[in-house]
Image (tube, rainbow, N blue to C red; front, side, top):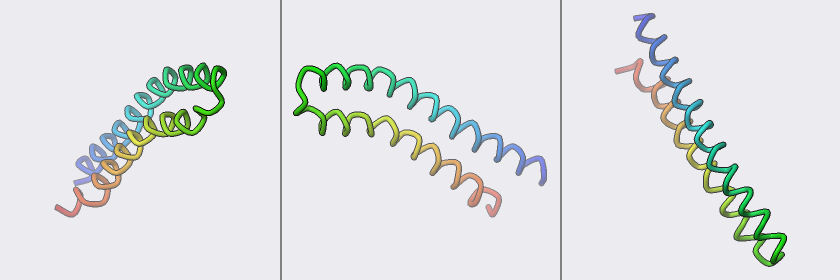
Amino acid sequence: MAADLGMIMIGAGIAVGLTGLGAGLAEKDVGAAAVGAITEDVGLFGKAMVLMVLPETIVIFGLVIAILGVFVLPNM
């Protein structure tokens, strides 16, 4: 039983870690493009901010999966 809980915790850590890594890689490219667009036209600031937030939603999905794994799987 303890080994099962340990594997669930490792899976939760991997879920959050890999989604964070993926979001960071995506935000690197989006951020560079957003800064370039804002330097050319300041009116694009709002659209650039929305595009900067989109990769972060991936981390939220990973966190939800980790929370479900930690709190729901041990009770099954």
